[in-house]
Structures are given as C-alpha cells and as structure tokens.
Length: 392
Image (tube, rainbow, N blue to C red):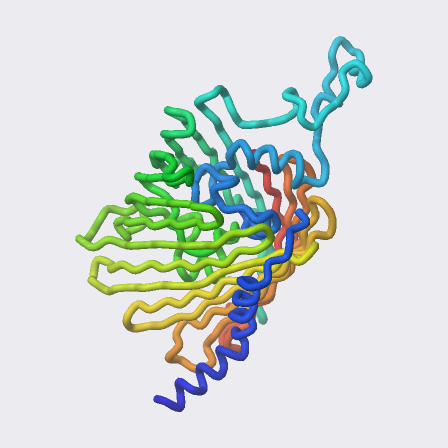
C-alpha cells in the first residue's frame, strides 16, 4: 500500500506542482494591471462584489459593471442612434454629437430608481469527436437567464431573482447591506450559489463539475459576507441538498476568503456537510491569479474527501489580451477521480478565442483535447465549439 501511494503521488505532483508553485508565486508578486469571468476581475484587481449584485459573483451585473462593459471592455461601442431615421433626415453630428456615454445609447438596465433588469443568453454549435465514432454536431442553448433586482431601500435592502429559460428560479434571495467601521458587510437569505472556488463561466470545467459548484446548482440557507480593505470573506450555512427538500438534520458549511489587490489575488475555499445517508464530504482548495502586462494567469487546486474516495482537481489558465475586447485563453485541467487507483487521472487542454464585438455581443470559439485511460474512447475526445453570447 505504501508503495502504491508513493507511485500515485509521484504521478500527481510532477504534473501539478507547477500549478501550486504558480499560486504561491502569484501571492508574492503582484504586478500592476493594464486593464464574471475571473480573468477580468484579475485584470482589474476587482472583487466579485465590484461588478455583481450577488456579492460572491455570477448573475446580474450592477451599475458599475454595465458602465465598465460598455466603455472599457468591448472592441466597439454600438451607438444605435447612428442608424435611427428621423423624418427621413440624417442626424447632424455637429449639433448632436454621438457619445458613448449618451443616455440614448447607453443601457443601464434600470427601469427606475428601484427596479433593474439584466440577462444572459448563450447559443452554441458544438462538435464532439471520439476515436472510432462519427463526429456529433449539435446546436444547443447553454444559458437563457433573466435577472431581476428590486431595491426596496436603495443601498440597504434588495430582492434579487434569476429565472432560467424554463421559468425556474435559480437564485432568489433577500439581501441586507450595511457598514461596520466604514467597511461593507451583508446578510443574505434564500436560494443562491455557494461561495466556493472561482466562478468560471464554463460549468464543464473539472473544478466546477467535479466539486458540484456549477451555475446549475444552488442551495437554500443564509450567507454572511464582510469585505474590509483588500479582503473578501464569505460564509454560508445551507441545507446541503441543493434546491431540493431538506432530507436530514445536518447542514452544509461553505466558506471562502480572498486577498485582492491591483493585478493579483490569492484565496481559498472550504466546505463540509453530510448527505441523507450520513456520509460526510469535505472539500477545500486554494486559488489565485495575477496580471503581467497583457498576460493574465489564474489557477485553482481542489481536494475532495467523502470518507471513501479522495479526489484531486486542478486548473491552470493563461489569458492573453491581444487588443481591447479580444482575449485568447489557454487552459490545462487535471482530475484524479480516485487517488486509490493508479493511472486513472484525466487531463484536458483548451484553446479559446473570445472577442467582445460590442457592448452586448460576445463570440467564443474554441477546441478542447481530453486525455484519459486509452481503453475508454469517451475520455479521449476532441471537443470544438462556436458560441454566441448576448448579455445586458
């Protein structure tokens, strides 16, 4: 058994130790930035709460994010007034100049001082090629969300809801915001995403799919957050059953902490809970990122222990800002689904190009190569996709 453990760890650490080293290095060296998806937050040195109504990221963008997306992120600002016909005459741009901050062209999502809306829609054409099998080309709708924010008492109490394309509520909660010694804190109650790891938009990434913290999984409970200075501290106590009915007396505890500065961040997450059969599962991980000129790096390592099986998951991602609104992403993923079994780990390599064409439209095109045990063709496939992303 001891020999098996040595061999197993000998396989894992040479492949993953550079990811650990990257995270530790990013925690020490913090270069300045040139410029929720985590790579954007790392570019700017922002916390998740800087751009999202949900303080731990994901979902509706707040007023600041709407301004950022339409004035700094995109390759081009589409001013619809240029194409608007009024009395069969063109607009006199000298008397009525076109401005990117024009209230006629800028979209804030605000219906009034109390109510704001937003949304995300992703349509995709993907191809999956497995050795010895014909390729599979499929059109899919990956995401269709509508967001509703109601500020009952502005900057103090709000109601928030996310509805998917089927009319089901993914998130629905009440949020109370306040300040302690001039530093922001909040209480949240309802159904929401749990604060674990980096919120990659790709739910199929190992660090999201294997841990179960995807955009398709929420839980019901309460959450507290405190963000003094560069720190972001969050803790949630929930049923531990997703959005399903409670089936035991236990609860799931999930917590995260991050130190965020201009151009870099370092953080960690932890969660523990029992299922209906009394089996306890614990997960913990570290994550971080930094910006080096046009190059951004982020990484995450997670460990899962459910008393019978131990798993190890890792992601390393490099983003290159070709020009404003044009990002190229390369990522490496690792997943060992059972440490007790030798040579069963999975690896993936991805290359993605994702231009923001204007303030409401993003295209994404990419390819991903998977490497698993040779006996299983499904673990050695090539996946490619073309995605249309509309957002507001």
